[in-house]
Amino acid sequence: MDIQALRAEQLQHAAEVVRHDDFDVMPPRLIGGADVGFEQGGDVTRAAMVILEYPSLKLIEYKVARIATIMPYIPGFLSFREYPALLAAWELLEQKPDLLFVDGHGISHPRRLGVASHFGMLVDVPTIGVAKRRLCGRFEPLDEEPGSQQPLMDKGEKIGWVWRSKKRCNPLFVSTGHRVSIDTALQWVQNCMAGYRLPEPTRWADAVASERTAFLRWQEG
Image 1 (cartoon, rainbow, N blue to C red):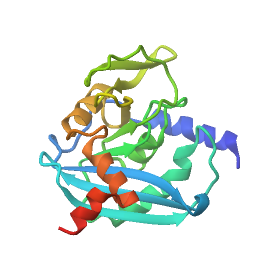
Image 2: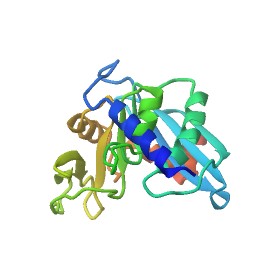
Image 3: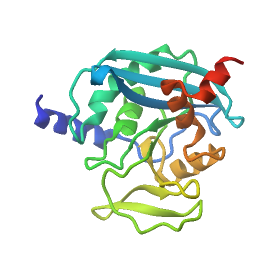
Image 4: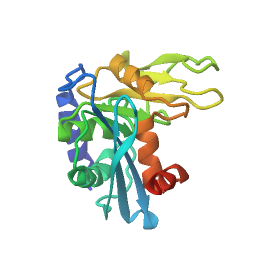
C-alpha cells in the first residue's frame, strides 16, 4: 500500500471540497443517511443507505451493499476503505437525496478529507459528517445540558462543531462534508433530531445496517 500516494490523493481531493452552501434544493425534500461497517472479520465492507422525507423524517427507501474489503485499516485513511461500498449502495438507490448525512468525519480530519468529504465530493452532493468520536482538533468543555456546543479547532482553523444532542450522552462531531458550510451543517443536524443522540438519517442508516428493532418493526409495517 503506497501511503505517500494515498496522502497526495487526499490532499488533492481536500482542496476540491466545497466548504460553502451549494444546495440544488432548499429546503431538501429528501435527506439521506449512510453508515459503513465490516463483517466476516473485516473481509466484507457493508454500506447502508437510507432516504428520509423532509420534514416528516419518515423512512421511505433503504439499500444495503456488501463488497469485498479492498484495503486494510490504516489510521487516517479510512475513507479509501469505506467509499467503494458507499458507492455500491448509492448506485442501488432509486431516489437520490438532496442532502446526505454520513456517519463519520468530513473536514474534521488531519488532512481535511474524512469519509463524508471524500464520498460527498465523489457523488457531488451536499454532505454532512456526523461522527461519534473526535479524530483531531481541540475544543473547550461542554455544559451537560443538551444544545451545548463548542467549535472544534485544529491548527488555528475551525473544522467543525462539537454538539451535545442529548443529556448524559457524549457529544457529536459535526462538520462540512461537501457543499455545506460548517454552521449550516450543524443547523441541519439539529433540524433532523427526534429525541435520540443521533440525527434521524444516520440513526436509520445504523438501524438498517445492524437490523435493529426499530428497522425490523418498520419492515413489518
